[in-house]
Length: 607
Image (cartoon, rainbow, N blue to C red; front, side, top):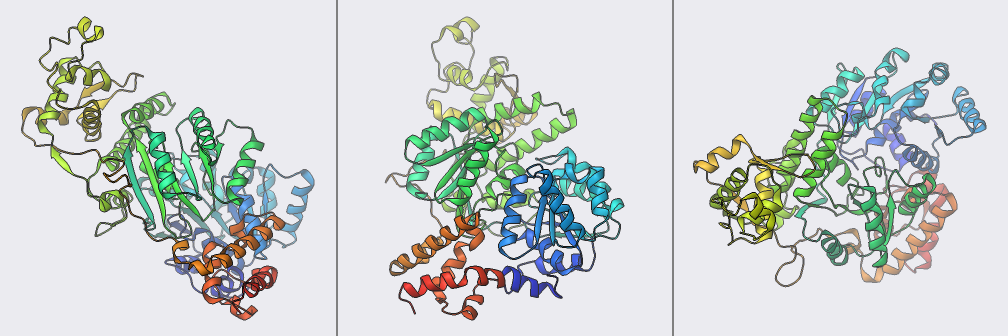
C-alpha cells in the first residue's frame, strides 16, 4: 500500500489533485519524522494530515481518538478507499480483537484507531511495541487540557507516548484551542520542539446569528420553515429533559427530529445517530454529548436553544455545520436565564476556585459575543488570536447593522433600582419595581416607597429585560448563581451611575421584519447552482449513492460527497479516465463505484 510521495497517495487513494492550505507542509513534516501540533478549523481536512503520512511512511499509523463512533465511521470510510484500517475498542469480541492484533503484528494494517484508556493498558503498549509504528496521531488534542472545554482525564497519560515510542513522530490535532489551551497541549504532550501549525479559525461559509429568546420554540419553527425545509441539522439544548420534549414537539409538527443524550439507552443513541448520518433531512436534538468527530458533511444548520458555556464550546459545536464548504447557518437563542443556569452549573462543579474563575471569564466572553453590535466573526476569531481585517458580511450584525440608542438614563434607573432594593432580587422583581407593579411582595418589602419605584413605566417588560441583559453582558451587573439569579452592582457601574459615562445599548432585533420575512440573507447553496433540467440527474445520482451506501453499510457521503455528484453533473464523465479527473474520485472508488455512476449519467441521456 505504501507509495513514495504524499501527492501520489492524495491523488490515487483520496481522489484529490492538490492539498489545501497548510496540509502539504504538515504532511511533509510528519513524513520527515517531526513532531507536529495542528490547529485547523472543522472541515479543514485534519484527518488527511495523519492519514496520508501513515500511507507514505513504513509501518502502521496509530490514531488515538476519544469516541468509538468516530473510529468506526473513519475506519468504514477508509475501507471504501482501499486502506487497511482497523480499530481496537470495547465493541469488539475477543475473537475480533485477536484478528486485529494478528493483522497488526503481521504488517497488514495501515491505520489503527485506539481509545486513550485502552492504549495505555500494559497489554496494549506491549503489543504496539512489537509492531512498527509509522506515526502517532492524537486527535481532539484539546481533551488533554484541564482548561479546555472538553477535558478527558485519560488524555493526561498521553504525555508518556514519547517515552514508549521514541523516534516515532507524533501529530496532535484539534479545531478549538485558545492560547492558554494551546500552551497546555504543547506542555503536556512535550511538543515544545515540534512544528506548530495554526491554520486559522475562519469558517466563512457559516453564517453566525444570535437572537435573544422570545418564545424560542416559535423562533426555531420560523427559522426551520423559512430557511431549512428538507435540510439536516443539529439542535443543542442544555438539559436532557428539554432535548426529549423539543424532539417530540418538532416530530408533532412534521419534522424527522430524533433525541440524543447520554441518558438514553446505547442502542437508541446508536440508532438515532445512524439515521442522522445515513438519511436526508434528519434533525438531531441533543445535549453536548452529541457531535465530537461527526463527519457528516451536509449539516446545513446548528441551533443552540440555550447558551453554551464558552466560545470554545460554541465554536466547536457550530463547526459541525457546513463541513462540505457549502453555506450553513449557526443560530443561537439566549437570555438572562441561561447565564443563571450556567453559573449554577459552574458553582456546583467540583473544580477548584481558579478553574471556576476561568469559567466565569469564558462565560463573560461569550456574553460579549452575544451583545456586540459589530461583526461577530471578527470578535469570534479575535478570541482565538486570529485576525479578520474587514467585517465578514455573513453574520447577522453585518447583514442588518444593529441600531443603538443612548441608554444612559435607563441604565441609571436600573442600576439604582438594584441598589435601592438591597441587591437581593432577580430580573423579574427589579422590572416590577421599575414599572410600579402593585404586588403584595413589593408592598411587604416596602419597595413601593423607594425612589426608583415606578420610574421606568415608559419601557415595556421586554425592553427592560433587554436593558438588564445587556448591563449583565457589559459587566455592570453581576448575577449570583444561588438559584435565584440575584443581581448586584459591580465596580464598573460606578461611572454610569455618576453620569461620567454615556452608555449606548442595542435595540432588540425583531425576529421578523415588517413584511413578515426573516431579515437575513444566505449565500447560494449547491442546489442553487443546479439547473432545473439537471434535477432528475441529481436525484438519480443521489438515489444510486444511497443504494450503494446501504449495500456497503456506510453513510452516503462515504461513497461520494454532494460536491462530487455536482461535478458529475457539470462534467458528465463517460469513461473511467474522465471520472478519475473528478475531485473525490480515487482509484478504489473508481473501481468500486465508477461504472454504476457512469451508467446513471448515460441513462439520463447526457451522453
